[in-house]
Length: 277
Image (cartoon, rainbow, N blue to C red; front, side, top):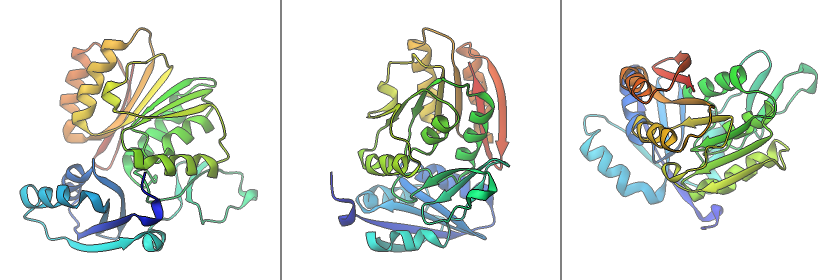
């Protein structure tokens, strides 16, 4: 693996007050970006430099009507670029997600998830991450075995372990997420009861878990649900996000066709989260 200090990134920024436009752009970039920040009506998408050709093709073929500003970002400037945008996020009255440089007040009786932002997708800022964490709080049980599909930075894995998971398996396709995943585990003093597998989630066949979480895009979720149905041997809960409200009808129809049961639905902005078994 390339040394992280030798890597470089680039950003594409756009100003828009139209959420549907931003969500459309987000979907095009979803599989390739390593982060997103927002300041007022300015949205900044971050990518590793080795994805330049792919992103250029997306811009030329799917986003040619939008005007983006391009910026190269070297490793030593990455955190400076992120720091001005990454603010603590309060999930509820008990839990807050904070960047690694944020000072914690032990007297406030809050639980914290600490994240080193920017090296992998999953800082807690996006609605889909918050939706799954809120659903985890409601549905996880002490000693549950949890499977995190598309783990990215590990933020959802950390949440599951903090909420009582006895065993966690994280599956992530992008090997470049590996260092950031382990860094975030260490940052949260999590030393055991978890494993990270670098693999395609659609090739995964072991579903001997109590709870499955997946924050992935619609196309992958469609194939994933069929895959889960194929290998499912016991009853367990599934928490899905990465889905737009426009995806809801198609996903619910598929859930019904595959004979899953919907337990709960949440929405934040244009994004939804569905819990099923």
